[in-house]
Amino acid sequence: MVEIDNIDRKIIQSLQSDASQSVAALGEMVGLSQNACWHRIRRMRESGLLKSQVAVFDPHMLGYTLTVFAILKVREHSDSWTEKFAKAMTAIPEVIEFYRMSGEIDYIAKIYARDIQHYDLIYKKIIAIGDILDVSSSFSMETIKSGNRVPV
Image (cartoon, rainbow, N blue to C red; front, side, top):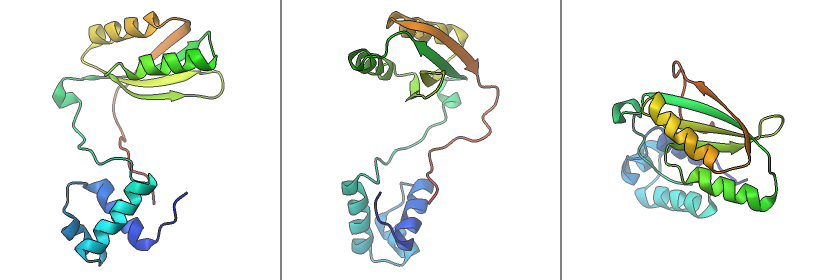
């Protein structure tokens, strides 16, 4: 864990709301000079606290009208197979998020697809990886809350 103070918290909250703002504007908002603010952001990057700064686009406006949560149960659990499987899944661009789980579910993937036929093509790519016992897919009816902000 990285040590942060109240000014760091304000910087984090502001960047999570709008990462495109200038360092000068951000510094002014949190009560720091541009240089002091830049040094704090650089420290956050170097420590790994700040992983990336990205633009977030609306998937629907880009033609991805279907959000799928695929629950995967697999037959194999060796380190080498798990590494191969993770590499194959992350190579599928429509797999937006991918997690290894505890309990009865082995993996869960969040997938964006244009429609059901497009998802079927993605599904076929997934099962072609091999050693998958079951893929259970649920389709999102409505997005109630979505985001990647970490509470600080």
